[in-house]
Length: 404
Image 1: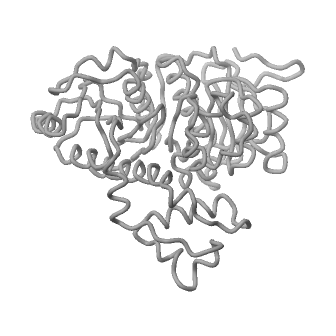
Image 2: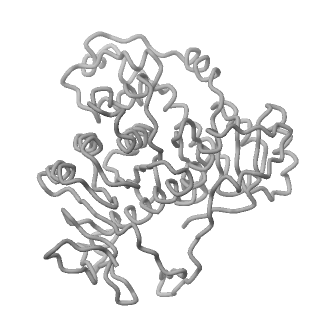
Image 3: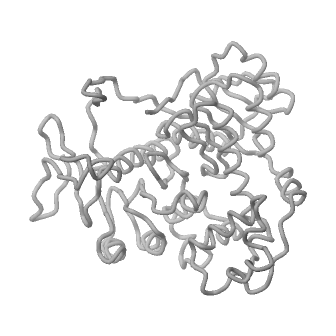
């Protein structure tokens, strides 16, 4: 049972304003066995999609911490993670790219570092995110969250000062949920589609170092840090709408390709997001002369366009003055290609097997050196051959991670 503050009535159910859409009423969350909900709503009034994000995202960070021993954070939108990360210090360049170089005491808070990484990975997608933390939210993490556009947060606890900081968001209406970290769900889960009930065992499959032992390529060397990256990628995929592929490096997911019907489209999408994450740390991007009046979300939009092939939309003759003090030089296609060509050591996870070697070819262009995927395709030999061509190390996990 969840621990309830003195004077707080245990929640048997919580009525929601509506379901996925305003016309879907009535709506509520409750425990089918009649138990109290394992949460406390400390502020705000979360909605249906908020809770879908909350309960999926908390499982993700809880499992990453169990697997790595490191605190973790994730940023969720529409029931898929934009990223997930563990609590490692950020380089000066990464701090600047994530807009956190001015956060006092960031290096002293592993949890704040984890969220800075998760939020900074794909800032366009994380706009209005749901946050999950594996540990008690501290002041530094709350200070970082306060200035981001976010719908809500779930964590096993909050310091008093952190809670007050978060309560001040959204004119006092920011959604803050505390979850009982000792809660254990039933081993069987159910949901209805078209009035028909589906039942299945929960996906309790453990993702850890033991899963990475079946290396099928000529290169058998996967460094310990890259094993952590592979674990983060695979756990991220476990809670991402399928089909899905995830790129990870330095203790964080850097590109998530979610919900595509084609595996290669997942790899391209995730790879493009990973490339953008790398390019945000290019000196030309870090030194863009933004107008002081330009807000953080607008800067994210401008950077996204500046890095793309449509940079004229922000650098054009009658346009650049809206965003910059002086007109920046473009980041040319040749410069981007040269910058990305130097990147290696990236890890990649896939929630199901790669059917063709084209996924490996695309992954290589984004610096992938290590891969974990279930295997089991009739073309496994072709995929292994592609990895051997580039001296990649690939693991067959023999475990699919579909999530719907």
